[in-house]
Image (cartoon, rainbow, N blue to C red; front, side, top):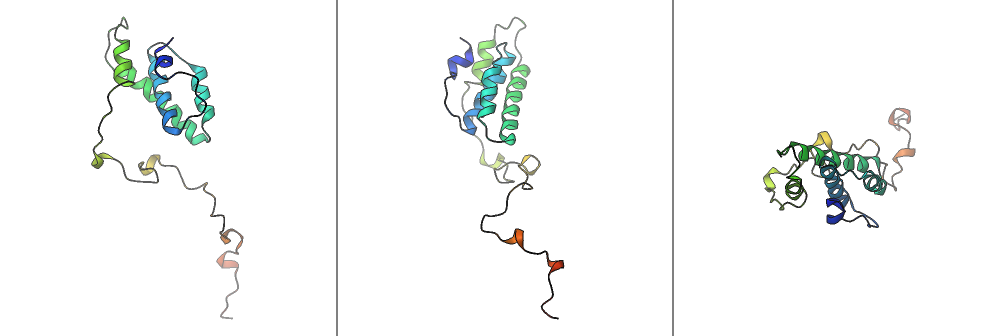
Length: 141
């Protein structure tokens, strides 16, 4: 049984966004440490409802791989348990509220926030069926 399976298990029914990102990150760390779980990663991706959420899962997976790769450890992989413990099972860190980004809907910087281009108009809005201003008759005439 791999570290990932011992820590998280694979018998989940549904995942919320936070759980999915945490699991994807852990899968990235596990992949760098030599245990890749492609079926689990695919199942997590399939659980997400939009392409945006799936891309966030991919980013979390890549971040886990990158951070595990960047930690210094001996060539013989004797410190893999330490890497797993510090990255996945590590202590929670307190975040200073002054360091939290405040832009956008989800507190993300505008450069990585979801675009509003594809948002649908409000359900009660009749604006979509109104004539544009330049096609409307002036009431003054």
